[in-house]
Length: 235
Image (cartoon, rainbow, N blue to C red; front, side):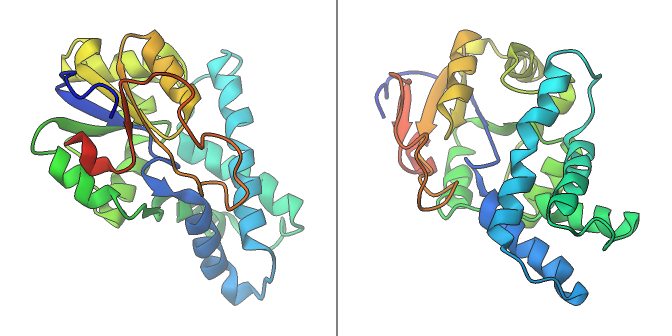
């Protein structure tokens, strides 16, 4: 940690990549859901393509060209594109697609997460500041044993990170000044945006989020208030 004297009353967390291993989890759940369809493909590539549709889908909402839509719906629309990319567009009916879409509610936490959050919870409010909906984040917390105090993020802001309103809405919901809230993320661009709104920042590297060949976010890109290697360090 670079600034252990800093004071904070709440920590809010990016989730996909920072708290949970979305890549291997989506690959695992997708393979399981499609096993009885006789599908054999590169499940990591399937997960990567599905995730790759995420930013372009949110960009339309951030730009104002589309009204706010919860990430559950965007994931479903992106799943349809992914199934088409892999030649599986006629394989599933709508109910089966929504069942597969629940893969994003079954993501495994990184090994340090649950114990670290549990320790931190004794000292500060902890909550997700995710682009995931309240429904998605709640079910993901139930699945992974994530001990959040409350669920914050895109749904309460009706917008997506890195728009400033998402971070500010979290602080308003907690009735805390921005400088008493720490944004925790494995993505430097997320922390850039949070710092611009006045929040404190904490970086943790997740060097295998994108696989063994990952080239981004391997180290902090700025002098963040905290640089940690384990969630328990914030406690």
